[in-house]
Amino acid sequence: MAAIRWLTPRRQSATERNVLAGEAAAAAAEAALATKPRPQAAQEEAEEAQEPPFPVAGDPRAAAFFDLDNTVMQGAALFHFGRGLYKRHFFDTRDLVRFAWQQAYFRMAGSEDPEHMQDARDSALSIVKGHRVEELMSIGEEIYDEYMAGKIWPGTRALAQAHLDAGQRVWLVTAAPVETATIIARRLGLTGALGTVAESVDGVYTGRLVGEPLHGPAKAEAVRALAMSEDLDLSRCAAYSDSHNDIPILSLVGHPYAINPDSRLRKHARAEGWRLRDYRTGRKAARIGIPAAAGMGAVAGGAAAAIAISRRRK
Image 1 (cartoon, helix red, strand yellow):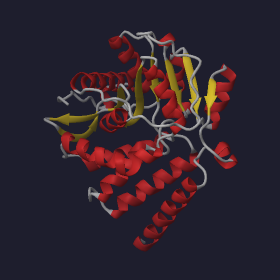
Image 2 (tube, helix red, strand yellow):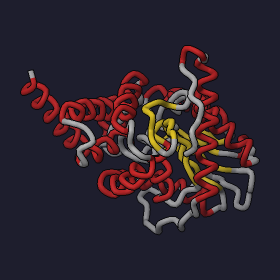
Image 3 (cartoon, helix red, strand yellow):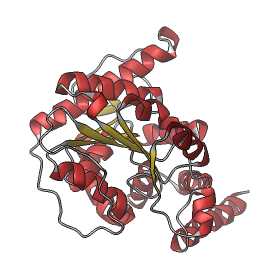
């Protein structure tokens, strides 16, 4: 993307940085939509497909906004992307240990912790600094096939398809890099994606962000900016998320859904009368908010490997 002026945190308040991040995400999403044709959605059978009581077919001012991590996809897209970069020798084993621990924490907690997510984003920014945007986009396509395609929740995918079938636009809204989010949206046949925008100059990453990561209030700012440019009526729109961090965006729309909710979002959703969907299986998953069975094995294996490598380095 074209060079974007970056303002340091010292010169901006948190609100200003959130607004800047939201506007940057909306601008990036609009640019991607204008320059790239949207392919037909893949035809796939979804488990536990549950159509919402709306959308109203043919409503041009309605749209749906989906959080990505643990809502559309099991785990965090940023961690899966990091795994793919490690395979391609973008960083060393020490960085892999950090990514493994972050992924294990994320899945066991079942919700986003701002400090851990910030650490992951800082790691990713340092890794991609100096690389071309075009290069990372190409690699991202490969990483999606290797690590992400099999982690899409079929039930959430079916909800998104219901909106598409009604002629509505569907957007991912995520703290993941906008390039990664755009790849996932395109592969799922969605309209586009709002994501964290990393600064680039002449097509090369600088290692800095434009504003804040697209998290919490920044997501709401991005949706507001997109709604204005796309002439959407937010009271007729829907939003889906698993995390209490996304209460700002869920409160912004007329049709909020809690999907695989963490405990705080579940409590809030019940108090507000929001609809809930849970596509996880197993009593333990319902209690602590992680995929059961095979998912736990993967977490345990990754954590064990991280411990072993860490001990050998001491």
